[in-house]
Length: 112
Image (cartoon, rainbow, N blue to C red; front, side, top):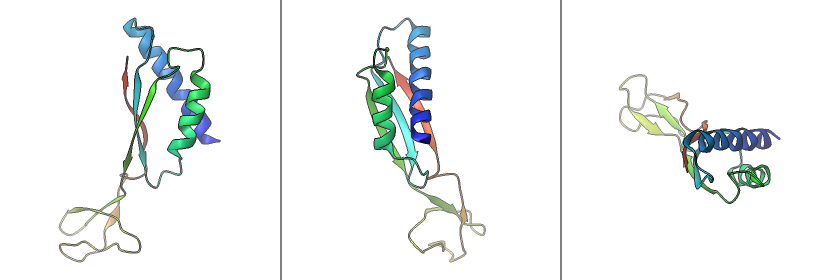
């Protein structure tokens, strides 16, 4: 159900942005979903289409970028991609620390 609320939030933001720019239509939304975010881009898109009906967002494209989960090495500072059951830095072998990358759910831009 959190997907529904996110979709409605983005429809409202995009409609406000279109009104502020004097645009009749929203052409596209660019969004980022982290692979570990617990959000389904497809479900958000379906709710978005439903919430957008009859608004400036109706028919807007929904461009999704999926961000990978990243770890940061506490010893050498390298940022590296988290792999299944593999947490060691490929450069120095230290165990990496979690970062925010891969958890985000963001509306990055609105095209009107």
